Length: 381
Image (cartoon, rainbow, N blue to C red):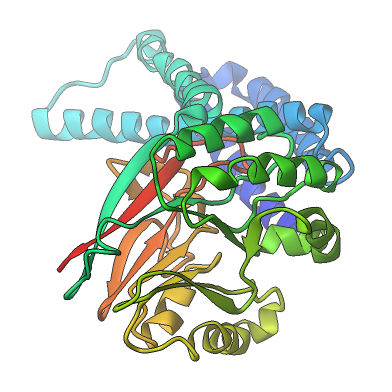
């Protein structure tokens, strides 16, 4: 948590510095200093609120409201910074390329640029209040050579990163599961970060268990990093007695005779210094004993498992963790490439690896990256 808060502080400080500079686009020089000081005071309060929201007020209604407001206001500043930069560049190019004389009336320039903060607030409101609630359904085909009729058409429905807590309650979880079950899939796969508030673990597990009969081969689940943060033992107790099939570096045969279908799952390597070693070891434990003449599906929270699973000729690897970046444009993530696999479908040899965009968030904002229900169907290659 300390590392996360440190990174958050650095990012927010950079946003504040950029916005302070960008204010000069809409504020006249004689009023700029005063405006910068006022915004700085507001930003300091927002940072303090976010720290509280992620620590002492985590999971509470008050914490959720504070984080929602702070996130939207900081996102508005980010959008404004980009719009202000684009505005200045366009004005410069217009002047240089078309020899348009500079407008001596500063007030007219400021009036034209005043639309920028309004546009930034509109984008922020859409991402914070609308898109993050608009779940889309994505369909994919998984080609299998010489696929027998008894497993042809078998489908897996994937949910990931639900993050139960301030921004995803039990009623919303129930609605999500109802929508997922209506698709008619054979398996429900939840790839980690489902449980993120220990106060509702038991109720959450019960809600998920209520939908076990909706999927022919049941509900499978693997650990994510947030389950480790909240405490695996507490969540284990909540799952015990339900029909949620936890895959912890293990596998299960679900269907098929001539060509059986196995579904495996790995734990999350929470020890950062040993991540690469544990990733390889967990993959080995989950996949090594599965017969080669089979269809292998691996559930893993972190997308780096796509590479390790490819070594075992895994047909399909379902992952999450990245939330698809939560920011995108025309399907392209607009965040730094901190992950090798960030969003969508990837191919490593004969292995298909998918990075789910997530269904919830601890950062309540989505733009160009809506939450999703992903559906994967086995078909003839």
